[in-house]
Image 1: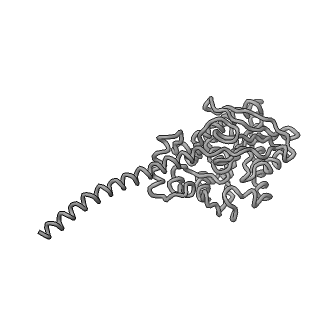
Image 2 (image 1 turned 90 degrees about the vertical axis):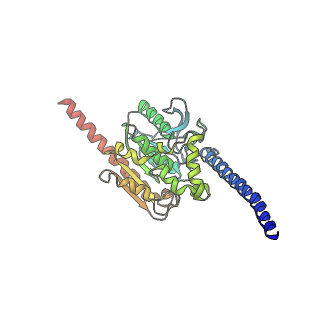
Image 3 (image 1 turned 45 degrees about the horizontal axis):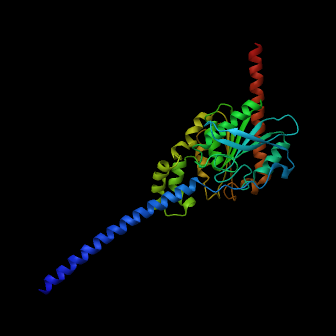
Length: 325
């Protein structure tokens, strides 16, 4: 009788515990999904940062400009900064994730000031969902490449000088993607770019989300394309490199970068080391190489631009000779 009572007791306990555990498991799954949706949404809907500095703060005269993304609908805001003499080239600056046209993390304006002094026209603009531009979703290069292509079109139709792209972080990746889609770009300067957005996020998502890799990285990467316009497979600079070469890219990256490891740039440089250049700094944090190594950084950029300018002049001379003949 006592044995039968114990067995009955165990049966009742199991009948309570098992459903309870199932309910807890289901709640945990829904909680993880809910957190992943929230975090994924936050990653693509960052609060816009105000533009707190302008070229005039650095003694430069600029013109407000409006561009239309290549998607045909997203309006983008920016500046055109002209040098005092005839411009040698047009350099388009592209900011990083969650930033805007003056990109204080670098910072952009002191570098722009030096380039303008050397005779380069600078275009600075806000990507979609950033600064004063239209759009409401950041896509880490997937759609931003169309924004940059729209700015390239503006430069092509308004100016005759060669076009060069300069970007940092997300802006660097976007510059590579856009250069692979536009023959109007003569070269790219890419500071701290990732090589493959999905591959990068699979490894480094916790850096962005501060959540455990398992299960959140898989859930976020699965759910984001379903709920937003972000498809990580549309932001793979590595796949654009063959379309950029033989045009040159100057890769800049710090070995101390904990946000995007410098190996990302090394991998891309090795794709075409005959035409690409690589400069690795040692102690700078993410996109901080200019701030820490200002003179050397500026020299690297100017040397790259001067080399491009010379190649463009030689090409123009050859075309002139061919036409004459």
